Length: 418
Image 1 (tube, rainbow, N blue to C red):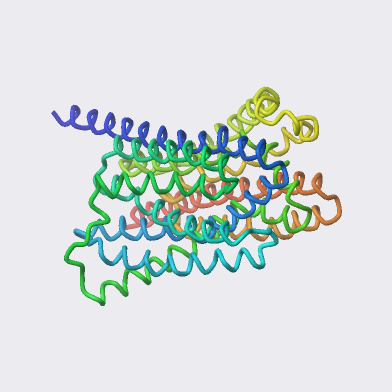
Image 2 (image 1 turned 45 degrees about the vertical axis):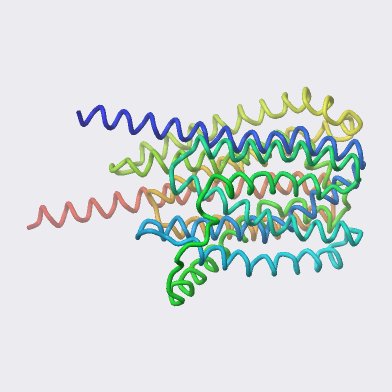
């Protein structure tokens, strides 16, 4: 009987993981292989670079805040039933900041936006934040089929938004329609946006403190992930942003799978009660190296096939960068997976250490390389930076494993002396 329950539990985790990954992959494929190519063909390479740069700036606040409020609710839900009102209030206040941030970006971001584009971009910053929070509806209820439908509606909205972009020339409408479609689905079928009884004001303060802590960590992580676009725009130009995005397209797509695959790993690892030994760390190292080699090879070959179809005008200018740009993204992805494993078996501070090393390496290596060698220097510098991050994650894994083994040996020796 117990064996059957365990088997059913594993099947449920696997099924939920498939629905989760499928929904996120569908949305990202829609953006990467439909929306972005259509933007480039309609508006041009330079405009696409500016859009990607603006979206990177938006992500640092909007995506980070939405995810942080979502994580805060998930964490509090482990201690009892959570109310909708505090999180709605927090998102409402953050929406004001998001709109102000959009106005500031329009003035000092280095990209010319019309008044209408600025207003729509501000609204997009707000609804994107709400949309990233909204999938907590399905994480709380463990309803991952609806989770998939949620992202399906977002993808359909993006498709309608592209049509509006072709009619109006307003690129933010594309994203706005996708986010609205997703939020409408949750609003009509979910419960998290309903006004309920609320909770005491002191608890709201505790939630805000938790959100701010989570936001500081998430914003740093998001900034690091989007730093390539921001640096290229700042140090070179918007065309460099587009060129790097296109050259690393397949690798970047793999890196975006970190979140859903991380959820799968956490689900399985949380059920594992055994120790993590040196043999396991050696296996992770070997598998990581194999994945890095074959994933980079696959992304490079795939780029030679896909990029000429999606972006024929840019192919000849960027094809020599396919291997280096995809290698950096694969290394980033593998390090993220290792970090998820470390969160289960090692000190949680290790995640901060890994991101801090990456940030320092990025500034210390990529900026000088880009200043002195331009786009080529940036590509090579980012490979070095991601390699350092990958190696640090492995070294911390070995350090934690060996430290635990030494502690066990000491304890065993003490017991023998007794």
